[in-house]
Image (cartoon, rainbow, N blue to C red; front, side):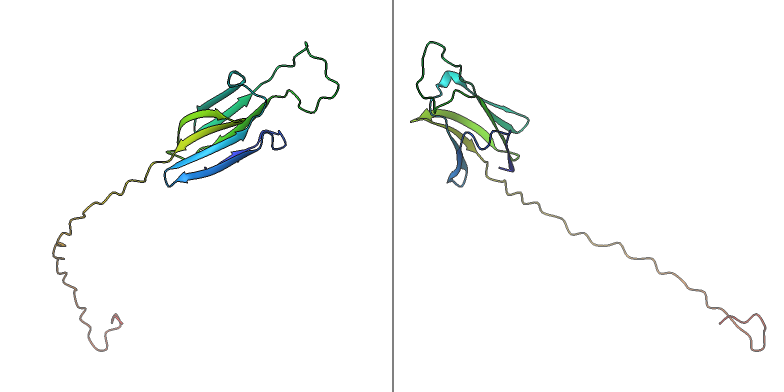
Length: 137
């Protein structure tokens, strides 16, 4: 995972990212009170977006309301090659499973060639005469 983009929800809902093995990761979000129908998991342009929406139940009268019906959106930027393999709910946690492929080991042989023989260049030697004012130094 390259980065986690927070969308101003003050850390709601809390989440964990765990490495299951060298090729599999899991993001777990605490979504107590949400049903599967109230959650959406989408991937677009290497961005995993998890969106939750709850509607207020106007049929109920609360004496105290500590569990608010609230919406959230949590974004995760996925590294190249990371794919979402599935999602499931378990005991108030939404688990999103990811796979990261094993990098391919590419071995390429490079042929060693014989360098062409360099042409011999003839360097002209200057002739100088003693006492000649145009003598080269």
